[in-house]
Amino acid sequence: MPLKLRRDEKSGIWYVTGSVTIWRDGQPHPLEIRRSTKVRDKDQADAIKRQIENEAAERNITGREPVVTFRTAAQRYVANGGEARFLRASHSAGARFELHRRFDAIAGTPLDKITEEVVETEGRRHYPNDATRRRQWHGPIIAVMRANKFRPEIQRPSSNEKRTHFFKPDQAIHLINLISASRYRNPWSPALVTFLFGQGSRVGETLAIDGRDDISLEHRYAMLRDTKNGKERMVTLCPRVVAALSTLPNIGQRGPLFLRYDGRPYEEREGRGYKLGFWKRAVEAMDFDTEIFTPHVARHSWATWFYSQTRDVVRLKAEGGWESDEWQRYVKLANPSIGEMAKKLAFNFSSENAQGTDFAESLRERPGN
Image 1 (spheres, rainbow, N blue to C red):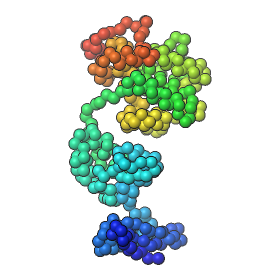
Image 2 (cartoon, rainbow, N blue to C red):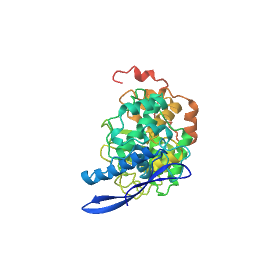
Image 3 (cartoon, one colour):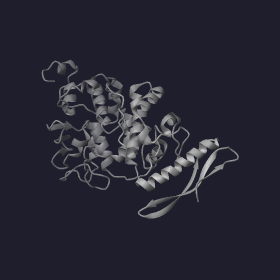
Image 4 (cartoon, rainbow, N blue to C red):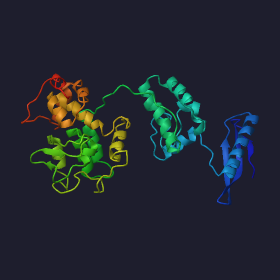
């Protein structure tokens, strides 16, 4: 049945209905069409009908699927598990997805026709702040296009300012509790997150810990051997970490200490680190931005709590494994109440054998630091 125009009597909107034949692998396949033109003018509606017919003809001649619009691409992206937070209209909920009106300027544009100039112009209109525009505008647009097999030549706004994000100790406990109560319950995931918050280690060097050779609960230490700078270091285990690790069934056994929910070792994804899906789900449940509050923020949190509690920059730098001046960012976050809260929650970083240094200038003055 050829395509026809049908006018809705109530709204006055014209609809395209009927079917077109798509040839695939030498066989005809009828494709049912019922699409709103969203216009009340019959001439405009007729032009849209011809466009649909031309798209079908292009598919038959070239064998290529027509390029989808940004709206359709965004719907596919969200339906396949993509982050909907900055794409979804505020009143869109559940399985129903409606693109936010801020994307109206590009919603009906095919992905291959979206230009950097339009993205930048519209982005500045909605988000004057570079950091916000980078995260809430450019980020979702690029993610949608990449998920639909397009590699856009769109540059994000520069992010020259380094911002330090961290969890407060009670927020970290809430996150750990959410992970403990998750669908795939296991002892390793909450213990791993407790270790990241309690010791400030990076994810990769933490997952490399051997359950027999690199850790001692009796003597409260762990050896980090596979480090970013290639230099192994020892960290002193805080009470909450000791308690969490004592629940692991493989403590004292050869092999990786921290395992997946199914008891298998983690495998690093090429160029993308390790996937900790349980972390992302828990952060989403707390309504935090998963693009900002990544597992690495546990390291920022530890450094903030550690300095707030101890004022010991020598141990901060040594146990954090810093050879650069990155540690200095945390010296500025010195609210003592943060450290006290951490101590009450058993993130106690006091050391009986280490002599504290109560000012940061001692490290700044040393050559090579």
